[in-house]
Structure formats: structure tokens, C-alpha cells
Length: 59
Image (cartoon, rainbow, N blue to C red; front, side):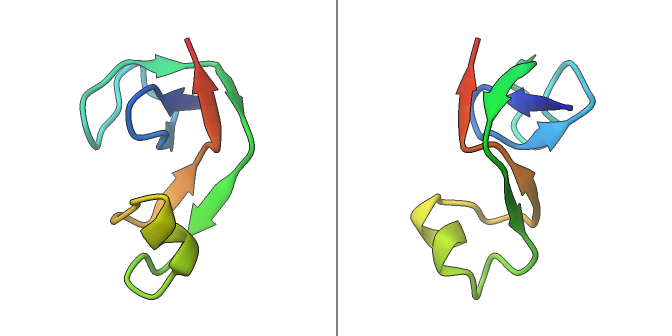
């Protein structure tokens, strides 16, 4: 898995399918958002699309 450098979305692609930014293999932590409208963590992390996200991403 790779994480987007901009929105931290986890994907297998070289480019993020959500925002189009490049991805990196260098990430740590995991947040899984099932319902972004009701999730307090998603609101604090500014996540509006359900999926898996990294907590930190480095280039």
C-alpha cells in the first residue's frame, strides 16, 4: 500500500485516485473511516470520503 502525500488516502496506485497527488511507500499509522459524516475523528482529520488513511506520510 502507498499513501497519498496530500490527503493521506491509502491506495496501490502511483497517483491518488481522490486528489491526483503522488503517493509514497513511507507512511505510518492507520485510520479506517466507515462513515465520515458521523465520525468525530474523520471531522478532525478533515476526511470526507470513506476508506483507509495513513496518519503520517513522508516523501
